[in-house]
Image 1: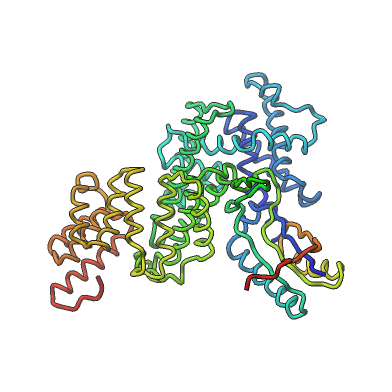
Image 2: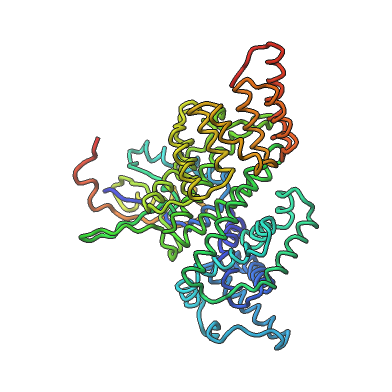
Length: 422
Length: 122
């Protein structure tokens, strides 16, 4: 890695901590961002000449803070200065400043920065965009490309989101235990949604979306380093690692979806799986089960199976039953029905999902599964109707193409050709 | 004399490497290890999982189990090598060969006082 690449990596790594501290000082996101920007520019000029500082984050906070203070002073007294105890005297060294920051504020600074991005007043799409822009430091162009929208549209989305959180006013006091738990939960959800945004996309866009999954994993690990004993964050991290481990096997060479059972397991990333499994084990020791841990445990069962047929469906059924209790939702029941169909047959699974139609009438996967179950029961005509609904609800071209394969197979079977696979 | 070579690096910086950069680095390091092996100097070598997987056990009569990592440290132990060298100079030489293939971080050489006092299990 060249010097410039190192500096780039150091700036990215320091970003959440530095922005978090600057936001605590100046309370305004734009001010903090400008200060960080300026500190980065100065780092790019200074570090190659003088060598990198011992503590890049402390250096950036120090330089960024001084820059923003000058700006605030220049603009006059219209803007309130940070409270006196937040300011250090000029003779204060960067090291001392850093020690103090790390000791008392590090965790809550970063958590606050993340929480600002996923404030409850923002819709999910704005939360994710804002987190990618502010915490991850992706450019508007990169984010726009990942979301398949124009740069102008994404710029507007981010500007609107910022205006909303400015109006909503996030408290800057050190949060109490309950407030901290609420923030953690909101941030976890945002990271989970960010991952799904990358994971659910497929087809030709996969290569632009995979960075979203990687970014979600990075944020999840960051959160876990801040709160190393939170078993649900371990669960979330494990879940993302285990899901992402399958990324290369999920689409074939023609960009067609390959179902989990049919995936080439040699393409699964063993390193990510090993880390994910270690994390599940660590989380389960706490005996404080939560939805992320249970989902991670389900992913772990899949990851450990030698092949689709060797999957421990009874264990998966049992885990989904726990998940249904922890977090009841028709989607969880729908997923459980897959395990039930493997264990006790398609008829029982169909009985299980039929009552869900009222709630999942707009859900692609519902009709995909219904069609597949009806096919297994040789109810071709009803299966065709379900698959037609699924195609109409498909989110991507690859999803629609996958259902068309099922339809083609039905067509062939009705013409008396042999069945190729179940 | 057995020396351990402990690899310290900022984990967040290490995580900033792309998969390709990381794979390329591992290939280069493997070449160095092959060389050390051929010279009869290489002992166990390991890359550790991220510190988020760490569990700490506090010593004492009633050992306490605590989840790692500790957020305060700037650099983390990410892996280690054991080399068998006749002198510190040669251990330093081995560490330098490894260090040239790593973009940043510090390698700490610590002579091993006792190595596996009861012998391995298998």
